[in-house]
Image: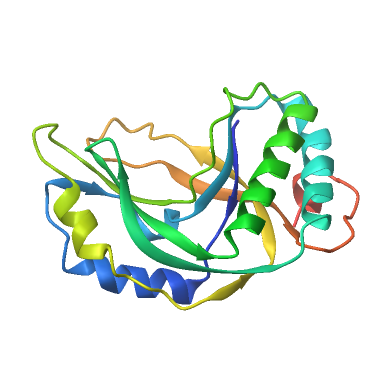
Length: 196
C-alpha cells in the first residue's frame, strides 16, 4: 500500500483556508479536495504489508518522543511554476523534528525511502493544468493568509488510494490508517483494528 506520515489540520483550520481560496477557484488550476489537505511529514511510497507492524511500532515511538506543539496555516508558495501550496507558521522546529522522526521510523522499519531532502512544510492546494500558465498570481493572492493556531497533538499514517476509474481530474483518496498522540505511551500494534 502507498503510505505517508502526516499532520492533519483540524476542521476549523481547513474551513478558514477553504474560505480564503474560494474566490480564487477557476479551471486553470486542478484544485485538491479540502478533505485531502494535510502536511506531509514523510512520503513512503509503496510499503509491503509485512513491514507494517514494525512501522506502526516505530511511528508510535516517534510520536511518544514528540511533545504537542502550536501550528497554523500561513502564507503560500509554489514548487516550480505549477504547484501551489499554503505554508505553515508556529513551532516549525518541532514540525521538522516530527518529520525527521517519521522519516527515521520508516527507514528503520525497512521502508525504502527516497533520497532525503530539506523539509519544507506545505499543504498542496493545486496544480496548473497548462504549463504555459503561471501559479504566481494565486500565490500572491494567498501570501497574507493567516489561519488560527491549533495544537498539533497527533501523528497520522495515511494511505493514498490512487484513482482507478480513468476519469480525467479524479484525485487520490486519502485514508488515515493509524494515528498516535504526541507525548503518549504507545499501545502495542494489533493490526488495522488496533491502530487508532
